[in-house]
Image (cartoon, rainbow, N blue to C red; front, side):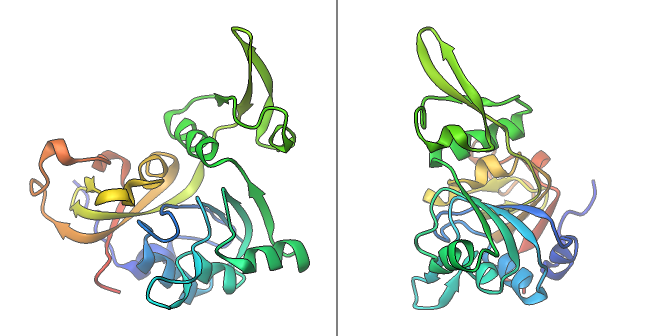
Length: 230
């Protein structure tokens, strides 16, 4: 069995300019903060970020540029695919005023299902959400379908080059247990990327997580970093 545990710097060194990255978390809850910070410090540019949101301009402890907001502030991101970005005003400034950032917004549940479809190898997902709205004009929509008399939108699956996810307790094989609501987008994103990197709040040995408590199986995880060692 290969050693999946690597340094945070080695992890971000694998991410090239122009990479498509899924980032788990909900307004920073459950995000891989040390990995995002290291990526911000390295300055890798022209990134496409797929996430529920873009973090927050001000974090819970008053810190500036919480989570993905650091990458936006540094102008390292050229394309955002998300569900809402209102907590990071610079997304609007770069997208609507400067025209330097492409922003694609999708309904939250739809985005989650599109990622799940990408991880499961499905050809798309049917959802009634967005029928008759501008979602139908999205490049991610493959058209309207009628099933048993009800209209649905067929949405494309989404896949990424890398997924950066945050786990509370992670063993050295990559089995992950999430604490509380930190599960959010992390679970589906772990399955939908060529390379999945999990940042562990607590790194433990194989067997320290009860099998029934494993949420993301280590088979989905390519690399592990210790969130406490930057």
